[in-house]
Image 1 (tube, rainbow, N blue to C red):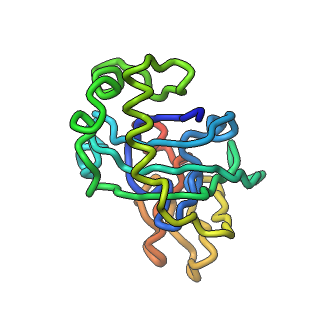
Image 2 (cartoon, rainbow, N blue to C red; image 1 turned 90 degrees about the horizontal axis):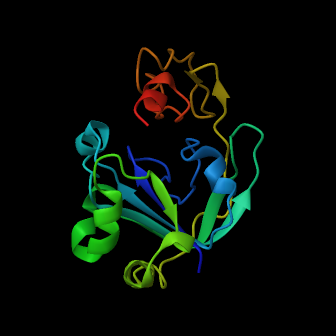
Length: 187
């Protein structure tokens, strides 16, 4: 099973419904060929502040890709989806070999299982077993479009302020997309 593992900087993508790419995180990499995704908290300050650093954050198995012209890659839902966010397991405890490879300064931001040795693949298999019985992602995705750095959530009934000024729209509290200037700088 080809698995995509990447380091996250913040919570919210995927969201609680299991839509990976709702904030356009990992962009065109979501278009790559994979059968499962494992998201782990990175080691940057932003991940630390989000409470996800060095933790297993989420697992998705059996992707379905939904193309959107508003994103750098498709939005992905999963046959099995498990979200931990800041309640995740310490990644060093569950996958010490992978943690040693990913959670060190200047390590790669993402890996595909083509690059794993036998021990790392065993760790991936152990992680994926956690989500084998998990329910699926939501079936339908409602795109929240981007508009020059402004929140244009369909839930927002008032003119939102620019995301460069605030991390959330003041009227609907929808988090910004990863394309905002702040999140690009922190990747």
